[in-house]
Image (cartoon, rainbow, N blue to C red; front, side, top):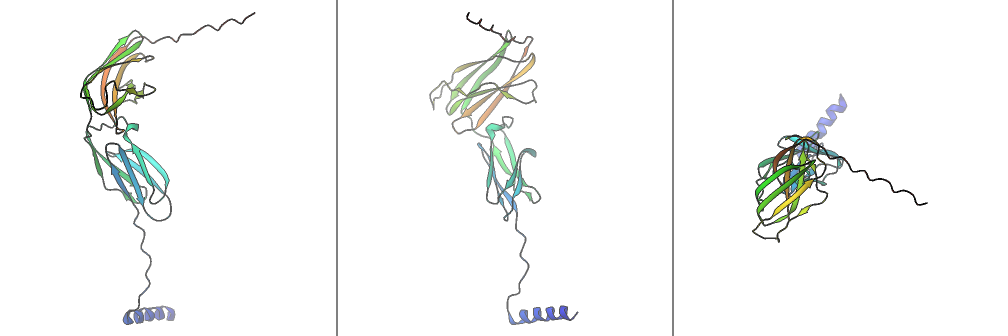
Length: 229
């Protein structure tokens, strides 16, 4: 009891003479700082020395998790990895620092597109599907990607191995006609999307165009050559 009263007395004396009184250090303000634009989204952690778990959300839906993130380290995503996000409309991006809280919401979208798409059609050709599209202008278009799905909300598979390049010179106000053949589609009702990739690195997705296929292509088996005698 004497020790407690002694501590109180010392505290009162220091306060009266104007000397500083030591206080417990404040807890660190840990939070994420988020940004988003037509190319992608990114977030930086504000916190103390240890690592954190950071989650990204678009319109309230989780899209990616980052583990062992250090303070000041930036993590990012690009929208070309998420073709389901329509950049022509408005969305909200938020970052969650697990155990601490959310970032301020950031609005992105309404991204300009350089393409004027006249049509995007899909026709069955035996056991294959012919895709054809026509543009009226491609001012900043780098090229195109083609996606297929077996349902309108199902996962999309990119069919082209490399980008289908634009057929008009950069900055041209005119368009062109393109064709692409889906060589091995499954039988049934099919959905196709067209992605326009511009020179700034983001993709606008159009579609779907629909068709039905009744037969599946049989793989061609070439006979093994006979050994020489």
